[in-house]
Length: 144
Image (tube, rainbow, N blue to C red; front, side):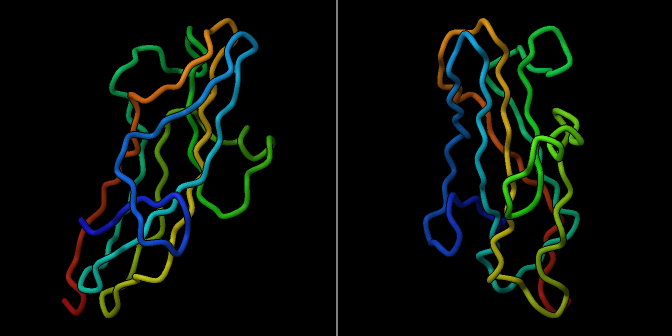
């Protein structure tokens, strides 16, 4: 798949490392960042684009569960407000718009996605790295 993650728009340096989040510890904390999804293949377009968050090294997720850890995803360029984040359910993936169309690949748009990871209080300060973004989509050849 020629869809890649970028930390900045209009750059050629994609990143593939797992998402790392930084948490301050005893008072709990929120880590927010924006990533961009970009098509690098002018011969392909994508439909049914779904972005999910996957945890590989931890067994303590669930904002409404016993631990308080949680993750939310939101599409858009502007940083979401607290009220907007409150409308998003923790742990759910998000559907992105199609990237390109049957007659044209879209290699110019960097699709913005905000990620919010919440840590509960009474945790040690830490950097969490056993987590990643998972992107699934249907890939189609342009012109077909």
